[in-house]
Length: 157
Image 1 (cartoon, rainbow, N blue to C red):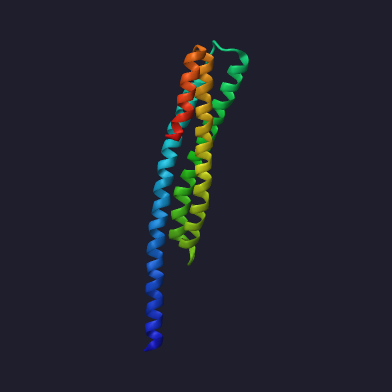
Image 2: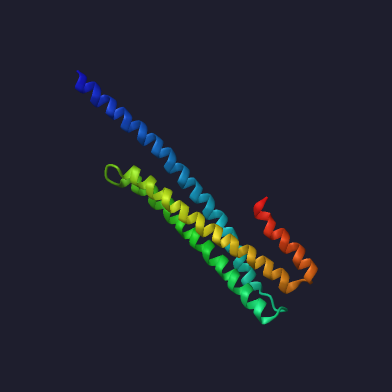
């Protein structure tokens, strides 16, 4: 009788842990969807900026602006791709993998989610630099300086 109770208690504990891990898996999956959507939006903005270009500025400013805008677009595209892969592969591993795969899927999603955040925020950083350089290449010095301060201060509010 004691052995049966012990076995029953262990099974209930396993079930409780799996339910908690399922919530965590859903949390990371939903956040991957959200980060991927925002990264796609920023990537589209960067691509539009590259297509429209800036013709009036000095070659040095144009070169820096082009590099920063391209870097912003590339990092955001990487964030989109990685978040899509993670939101598909993570739950797939949890559902179709061997025993213990739910725990493994949550651990992998947790570590890869940090990488996605790094890619997203690096792209956002380059996006801000690109916006500042666009201001300096397009507007007068005082207008560019005021707006650059606003752009730099915006993420800190």
